[in-house]
Image (cartoon, helix red, strand yellow):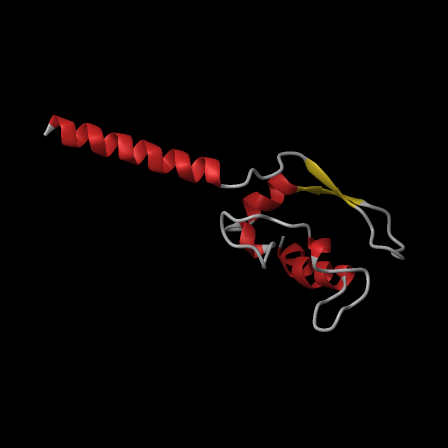
Length: 104
């Protein structure tokens, strides 16, 4: 019985360690978001810590990522100009961010 409990404890520890080390680390400081090519506004300072505390998970903002998967910058998909069905970087930020900011 003691061996079973010890084995279960080791398995639980390993499972937690695998999840912890498998998840990408979120930025802990401010991130400077630079304007898109041709944009008129200066870069903005973005507190990832405050935003992460306000939403349930990373996928809320990083909508194409999977929980625990690699996270890409918005500009990886959203370019300065609209590309087919993909919004421009400015329009994507406004559509994604404005609703939450109005509620804050």
